[in-house]
Image (cartoon, rainbow, N blue to C red; front, top):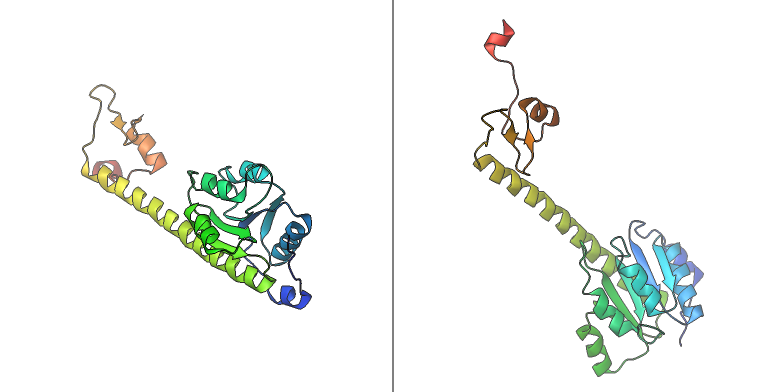
Length: 210
């Protein structure tokens, strides 16, 4: 397999990648795998490195697994194409961005890669400038997806509160507890301590002020 061309000056100039982004490299050729790992770590990324697709799947299917995966096409265990398909079935907060790494440059192979769910496709050989450019694109998209996921969570919270505001107050006629929107029952005092219901504004009545 082909090996990356390393230029120390280029690596030094491109340091400072986003430390929050985790990457996986699944590549069975040792020199290529180690070279890519070293370059990415010098840019500030956190990198997991494995030599076959089976080990890659063990890492990627974890809920807190890497957000970006660079997968070789031909490797032991699960090959890159099949691993890409499996990754795309994962139910995660944000999808894994997959860069398929291969020496196959035929149009039919490139189409197979994208049909399998790859987000990007790199043909060997390539240098660190190309690698950096592709990973930066992946990083930006992952960040945008994470921001959208956070916004969706915030919107859901707002809608839940709106629904709660529009609802009635189920109150037990015996103990006078109030049913919360999650089905739990709380006293007025408990609501006051939690301050989790915007329907309540706490103050002191004139009689209690006397």
